Image (cartoon, rainbow over all chains, first blue to last red; front, side, top):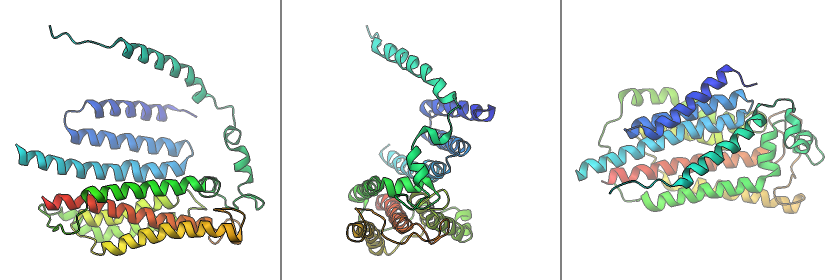
Length: 83
Length: 236
């Protein structure tokens, strides 16, 4: 059941998670975070859980990235005004 | 003397967690167990049937809406609470909406091309929630993604009051449909509509009705949440 493809996705998800924590720019961090969501979507779809995969694709990859990006835009604008 | 104190408990916790999870790895690797022997054996076997079962082919929807319907009700109310909190902090009715940065030209031109497909996919997933993977939550979020694209392209939803009315109306219809089960059926969230033919669109009794209401409520809630999110930005 666990083949090489899944192992590659798992390892890249772990690397992306570490990168998301240690990234200097917050924008990179958000992109690595959404990459984790994409990997989780593929893994759920392979593991025959399409319902969970749909939820992860809609919420974890789409909505959370959108909300984080808009939050980042708002907060970075405030920083520019202060400095 | 600015020597940093390193908590030794950290290492103890790390070693303990690693030891715990190394022991758990064979559980994930073992594939001798069949899928139906792992969890919910009884629920999965009685889902397609008429006596006590939900009468729909999708087992996940049967668990989420029928056997654990109260949990879904709680989930929807938690989302409502989040939407209310965001509206309390960010939402200002009087704030002027002027966009400082013009949206990208690709976004503003491609929105009319992409919009119907987003909407159709979301509605398909909502209406076929009891037959195919997906359901109210996923389809609602996808259909709301359409309006989020509009908001990104610089448009605004003018009828916010209608939006909030639809949201509350769908939420209360969910509870009304569930409460009617006390009179016509067995219990709260009980089945009282005819089940219909198995594996067709008009089947499953109250389950598709409830999932449609959940989809409407989740979709409108996310639209309102994101619009409240953008209000503060235009204010500054």
